[in-house]
Length: 114
Image 1 (cartoon, rainbow, N blue to C red):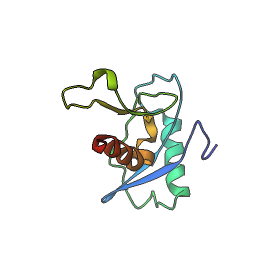
Image 2 (image 1 turned 90 degrees about the horizontal axis):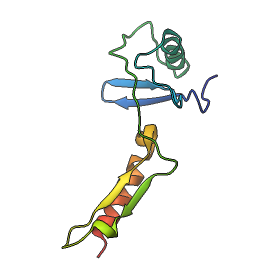
Image 3 (image 1 turned 60 degrees about the horizontal axis):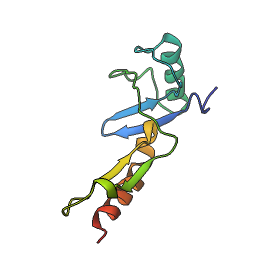
């Protein structure tokens, strides 16, 4: 499948590098990329308009992301004191590139609260 919940398809531009992903295989602990995953990612790149015959892969990796059912972005009143505010801001898992601007704005808003 292309673009499913288990096998999402995305492209992130980082300067002169394009990152193509990905997978979301809950409970999968395989530390290396499987050949069929590599081929699917190359096919995703082609579908996204990348000429895979004209460029070389710079690398590949498997990432394990901490995951929570919801993100946590809040002031921890129990552990905040003496003018120091503890703010929890985590839990977006592999969606970090998608939501980082919103989480950063919310965290900044909490930081600046009187």
